[in-house]
Structures are given as C-alpha cells and as structure tokens.
Length: 442
Image (cartoon, rainbow, N blue to C red; front, side, top):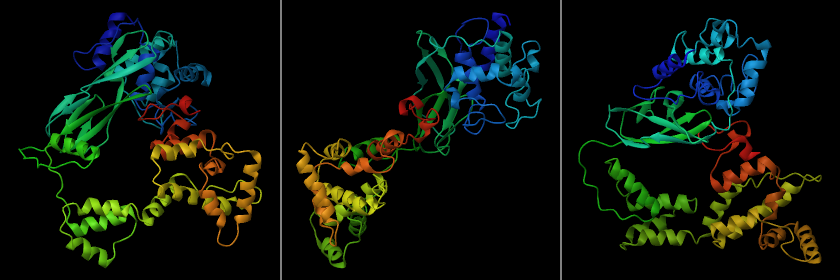
C-alpha cells in the first residue's frame, strides 16, 4: 500500500488531531500489529493468550513475546494464517472478521481501520521489524489525573517513548479499563465519562506494558471541612483526599463503639463489662490513646498477631521429613518464636531480617549447635519445654524448612507476606496491572 494511503488509514484509527510516526510503507509489527492484537482482545487470557491458546493457535499473553507470536503467525498451520497471494483470504483476516467460524466471534470489520492495518502488514510481507528500536521505555498518559464533574467527558492520550528516542501517539492501540465504573467509565477509544462521586483508577495497557491514570469526581456544593487533627500520616492522606472530593469525614464514633472496635482489633476479644463501665466513666480527653497503649501490652495482642503472622508465613506447611512429624514438632516452635518477638516489640525491619537471613548455627560452634539440637529433641515431651528453648533463638531458621520455601514458590511467599505483592500472575505471563514479568520471577 502506498505510504500516503497507509498514513490515512492510521489517521482514521486514531482520534482527530493525533498522528503516528511515519516509519515506512507498512505498519510496524512491533509497534502496531502486536498492540492491535491486544486492542482486539486476541491475546487475552480467555482467548489465544491462554496458556494453551485456543483451537490450536496461541499468542503470548498481552503480546509479551512478539518474536514467538510472529513465528506462530507465519510458520504454523502450513502458513494458512497469512496468504501472501490473496491477502483477504488470510485466515487471520477471515476469522477476525467472522467470515470463517471463529470462537471469539468477529473482532473487526472488513475495510475498518484495524482491518487495513493488518492487511497492509501482510501485503508488505508480514515482516517482523527489529525489536530493539521499538523496545518500550515508558508510557506517558495524559492527563495523569483529572478532576471532573458527573457527566463530563474527556479523552485520555497515551504516548510511547521507545528505545530509539522516538515518541509516538499510541492511544488508538491501547486497552483501557476503569477500576470503578460507578465513578467513571472509559470506552475503547480512551474517552472517559465521569459518573458518580469518588475516585477511580484507570488502567491503560499498550502491548504488554501497563500504565495508570486517575479521575476524581468531587461532590457538588460547598462544604466547610471540619478542623480535624490527624493522628498519623495515614489520616493526613485520607483527609487530603476527602478535601479534594469535597467529602466530609465520618463522625467520630462514641466511646462504647470505640472500645468494642479497639479491643477486637488489638487483642481480638471484647472488653469485659467492668472495662466498659470504667472507660465510659473516665472523663479524660486522652483516654482513647491511653487505652490503645494499654492494650498493646496485653498478652492477647501478641497472641492475635502471632495468629496473623503464622497465617502469612504458612507456619503449618511442614511435613518434609521422613518421620512425618515435623509439622507436630516445628509448627508450634515457629509459632512460639514469632510470639516471643511480638511480645518483645521487635521493630518490623529487624523482625523480617531475623526471618529472611536466618541460619541454624547463628555463628555458634558445631558443638554448641549440636547441644541445642539435642535439647530441642529432648524437650519434645509433655509440657513442650522445647517451645521456650526455640523461642530464645535469635533467628527463625524453621521458616526455610517449610514446604515450598525456596525457588519460585518461596519468592511468591516472601513477596506476599512482607511486601504485600501478589506475583502469581508472573509465573505464566506479564502481570496485567503491574510491571512484573516472567523473567523477573524466574
């Protein structure tokens, strides 16, 4: 297709006034074709991007492996997917338009801008251009944040900065998603519509690279924000967001409600009737802060958070030894160690360090270590004196003796327990909403 006609097709695809770099007579496989497969939903997890693909054809999830996708497009199925003699007879176009039965239905129309881009690429030899210049450095989403009124619409613009230094408007090749459609919706062209009061994240994906934007829809009218004093930096962030949304903070709960909530949150049990009466009778303005300080010193606080950390750290995942007794031996020891550190109020960074960098010998001589092992063995008896002995250790070497504590499984556990990250997606494909890739995990 002549250069002028190809550029005209691209202009039809994108929003008015936007342009795409003039890089040659044919679309770029790296920049346009792979992105178009994502735009059309072809390489999603429920379609050909699934681990085993669909109906004998597989694409990498979100186009994370363009080279492999090109190989499957041009070499598999006796090259029937691309017909260089009769372009319109290419299976890629026939199935995509629904002219041939397709499990995913028609994804584009004959003569549409998307169709012409794919057709032009095939007509130009379906070349896989050099990946290096088109390596994506970053996505620039504008506006990155927008304050809008209900019913207001605006268009998101997405630019891609590539390794060769070029910057291209790729809005038309992106997938858009609103994380809260009750606040704002976004269509496939990137047009955002504010719906209701609140703030919503917008996920933008070009090829396999995600980016984010945000829309805030404040409540109408004028509200005098109360003079509230933040108790911590989280309160300060919440108050700042409420001010931007023109929302008033919730009323402070009464003393009885506060006492019930703080007891359940800090020690996991309700206050006694005597504690309730004493708290309600206390006229001190500092009684709530004093109650929190008192509760964190109770044994119940360490008990409750020991339970939470044992769940996070999978303290029951033992049973790796031939005697099949390690769960009975070691899970209570791990629990005792965690409780001891919480009771000591060890700083969180030190707590994590003493788990992740744990060693069995802890710098002791072999004789000293063997003596501890023997004492632990002998302590496995009624009353379990071994629990107190193990709790005196500096580090938690049992963390590394659980099932799946190393390799990929261990990485997933540590990321979830200590960083609040879920990396399971990256075991099979690029994370859809984050920057983690398979190579980062593996």
